[in-house]
Image 1 (cartoon, rainbow, N blue to C red):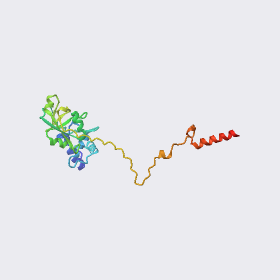
Image 2 (cartoon, helix red, strand yellow; image 1 turned 180 degrees about the vertical axis):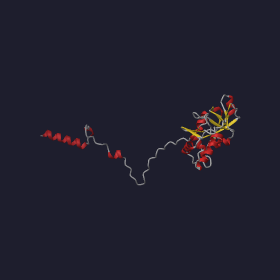
Image 3 (cartoon, helix red, strand yellow; image 1 turned 60 degrees about the vertical axis):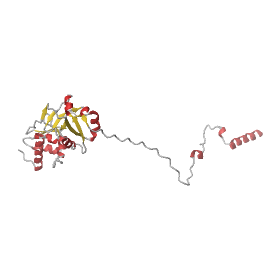
Length: 246
């Protein structure tokens, strides 16, 4: 077997336990081929002591260096090759009366209106206990919101559940009528902008009414003579009188 640097050797042991034996302890769900999204794996490792600095390139080093191969990366997924992943699924197992899931606050309103639905290609991981649900929820959000699922009632209505590991169940969708959670907080209304009050003049200030002060602008074309000043029309009449006398 390939000899690895100490850091990678320790990481290989953690990944072997996580991917081969007890992914359920970390809140991880392997698909039918044993793969799991690398993003979810890194989120789980970040919550474990001494694993917060693990990045994708560390996983790629392990997948490329170990001989015989122990891990396989395919696009954005990873799985263990040797030993083979444990079979943790128990199809058809009846769930307990209540199961729990913790969601991020940004999903609160959507779940409150439409219930729970897994992302495409994934499954909901429902815990037997509130504590397990909140522990997993804190990997995705520092302040998760607890959701209670009426699992037995949902199963009687045709919702499919599958046992997973020791303390979890899987499902793809939980209708709203079987979901219990507090209403989302109401969004505060945006205050309407107030019109600025006209500025009050300072004591001793003279305020001019500019339109009245300046008067009407003079017309340069097409001005009617009836709008002319009296002195101007009088001067014109005087000139006409003088021309008659000549």
